[in-house]
Length: 134
Image 1: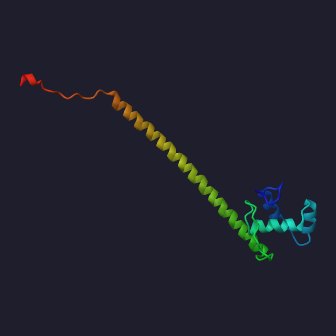
Image 2 (image 1 turned 45 degrees about the horizontal axis):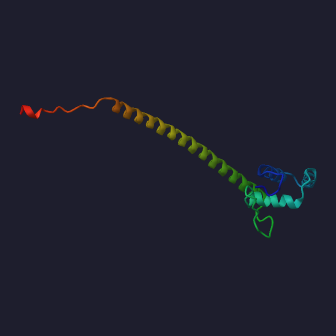
Image 3 (image 1 turned 45 degrees about the vertical axis):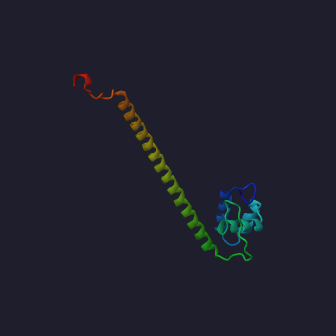
């Protein structure tokens, strides 16, 4: 879910980082060029740095700029790095699960083959003595 219809979370995050990287005096023309309001960008910044952009959650806080922009960017980069680590770990574990499922499948086939070979052989009949010869 996006906090603004027509924009994805990836686009919003890119806009916020691009805006934060602009020098003083270049931000208003940048906003006008993209037809964005300061209020919308402020909501996006709050969602990116302090909220949950993917779920469209913006924190309820009365004061803006509680964290300096440099620290905000550092926090966002740390969150992105942590997210990338988690995604890599999930991919690795998924690959391991598929590998183990393949091993289980092969073992199941081998066990089934052994059972079928065992059933195909005639069972040894025990030798019995004829009771009349006793």
